[in-house]
Length: 475
Ligand code: CUA
Image (cartoon, rainbow, N blue to C red; front, side, top):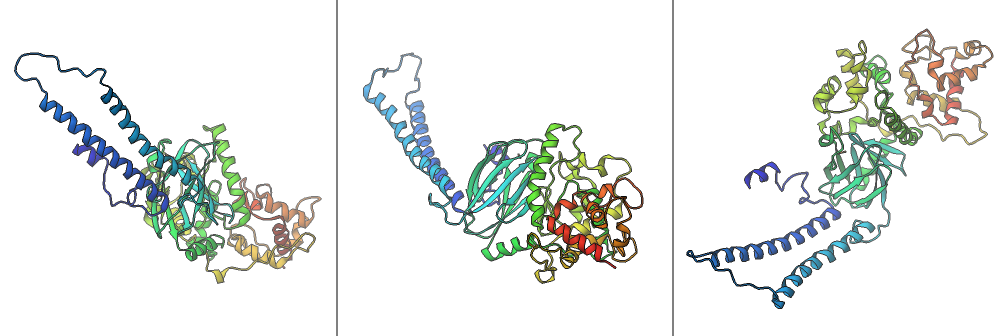
């Protein structure tokens, strides 16, 4: 009896204990569990007492073997032991069934909530993606919610069956591919609560965790606003700027880190599904699989699906050898830096990458270059908007507006040479095509552009117009 108790780690005071409830859903579930448990204990005590009494009182004494008195056909006994279980089962079933329907309607006593927050939670092997569909915000492995507000969690999976479980907030509901499920959660106190995948889903199942951060309404709004601001632009020549380039060349094919732009947030979900479908269609050869969104990573307390505290040491260890921290992770099997000889990152590059990743947090609200509202159809492209985009999209990290090359070419006098670069293409067409298809317009040789191929997809059409107008205006 001692061994199972120790092995199951039965401690009540734990951040993964369903008895330390922090919300109405878990509270109701705990109460009904205790109610059923008490009935079960009463039945257990009565049955065991009767059993022990019978064993002691009626055990065979002496050697004479006599058959015990038979009770076949005793109507009173038959009715009694048929009726007793029915009474117990009805007592358990009525409140349970009522609660199942109540918890389907809302988190509080079956009341339909006024202003619920809808969040999509997507299970991936082996991490959680969270989308705020009304807000154009998307993140991974850390779910932020306001306290005392009903949250309608829409549960999806892109691969196998996972299960969504926040022991202190709500019980488990499966995330099934092709079958939308949903559940209500609500936190009644601020704090951080542990979540865990509760359905065996493959090698890293036990390490598929997440955190739920419950904020006051003001702090939640501040977090949301921050998630929609760009990060601080790195100082040219700094370690962080060098790390940005390491990220662009080695990580950005799978990891999105700029979904603070609404257009990127909106396309991210489709991109994740396309990546997952590509992996399902050809798992042996797929080079791109769903990877956690890293936008404003430095705001998170944990990484690697909630198992590792986020700091420079742990992040460095992770980048050097992900398998040492999380066996089964897809990154070590897919990323070129671990699989293609000659592509390994140097120690310096790892340090630069860590510095860059830990710099990813929202710029102060008053430091953000305000981009004017996209012009309506028929308006003229705005070079001023384009200039703001040039800074906020990180173009200025690689391209100067003079003649010197940082990573990409300098843009001084671009309008003079752009028109004569490709036969039959105007300067405007050439610049636009270079933004949208960087790999087809490589200046200075090479086969793969350092500029992310997905760059153009992050811009609205009118923003591309604005950016082109600005680039062609550079003297
Ligand atoms: Cu996902 Cu277990």
